[in-house]
Length: 236
Image 1: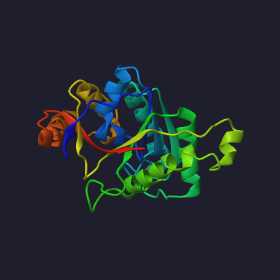
Image 2: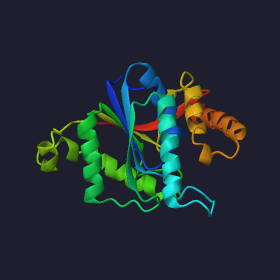
Image 3: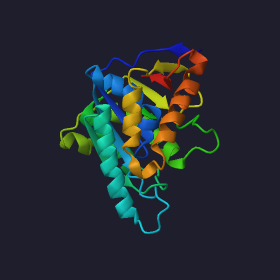
Image 4: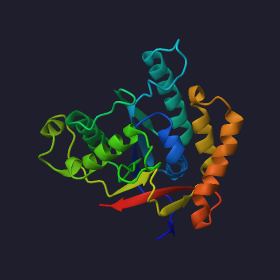
């Protein structure tokens, strides 16, 4: 059933995404509105997008350095308080204990009321979604439930002062099953500004701005909204 909802009311939120610009693409407007309302929003990027260039003169290290810099600028424009880069190889993320440990540590460190991440089970596009998106979404959900909350999971975290934490909800973006729509009219300009901060991924800023406005309208159309983001919401 379709429902229209405001951005979640939360004191803290954490967005876990595979690549720089994923957050801007799928939940940037919602996060910008949450940050403006006083929520402490933070982000974890599992890769630094080190394969995101067709320029043969660019090395993966140089690409990653540039994209991390762009991601930091974009985060500031959205009101995100901080970005953590895990620096897994772009296109090669694996669902390992080590990755889950990093995500559990981030959750226990920042103690979010709500998590935003990729839908790993019903992603967009259904058959051609980026593999990193599916892997990161699955690992993030496993990190939230049950690992981050369980006292006996990753005891080394408690030795480092990171106590277990229960996150109340997960909002899944890039979801083919999305039924919760957020009117992002108040955050859309910041969403676009943040996406344009990824200059290395933006050959035509004017065309991108126009196409993203059309995209926001298409996303909101099922709910009668002119400008929206859509989510599958899981309550813990």
